Image (cartoon, rainbow, N blue to C red; front, side):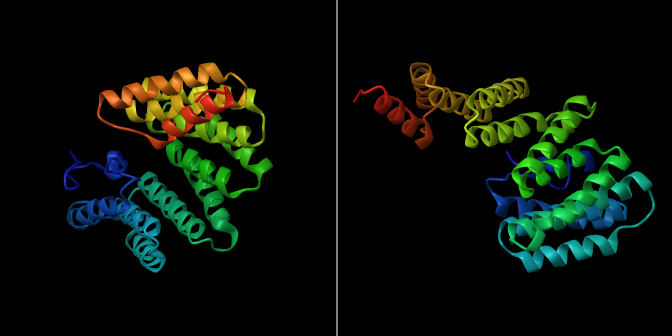
Length: 262
């Protein structure tokens, strides 16, 4: 069941997100905005508007996203320094994400750098990790790796659970970067870390994705029998809950082909 947008506290704003359903996410944030206008300070409203803008950017409605972020800047008030810094970091992050999605010049790099600085200065580790993660996407490969490593270091050292939750995604991203570079042993180490984090978070769906990544890397390492066994185990688990996954099916086929089997 979707969370009720009218009862979600500021600290749990991200609970309203479903990145596989940006339209539903937009609706939930739009429903929250009137409550934010009535009951909370400008910083809360600004944060709500940034997430509404993010959803609109994902939907390709870039002009609306820009206008929503303009409104977020207009309503932000200096009533609390920490809240103001959070709102400012969120605005910068979403300005950058809209620029990246819209393929604008610079891909939002300057905004992400500014968001990193603001969030770090305010002790907002989760937002700082997010900014570093985005720089790991928009920067050239060498700089991207540095930013991903910086994000990973902060996520590991932070006492903020929201920052710690980034570890799985960061490890997955770094795993694919090393895999694409052909450094499969390092990729496997990152994928294994991502899997451990997903298990710790008790997220069955994302744990299966992490297992798929480990098995895919095993195939690249020539450990095809192990890869096949894991993909078949995933297929059996999915079948037990009435689901299928074309990626699992495709990998089973690739493993069988490499092993010379039908």
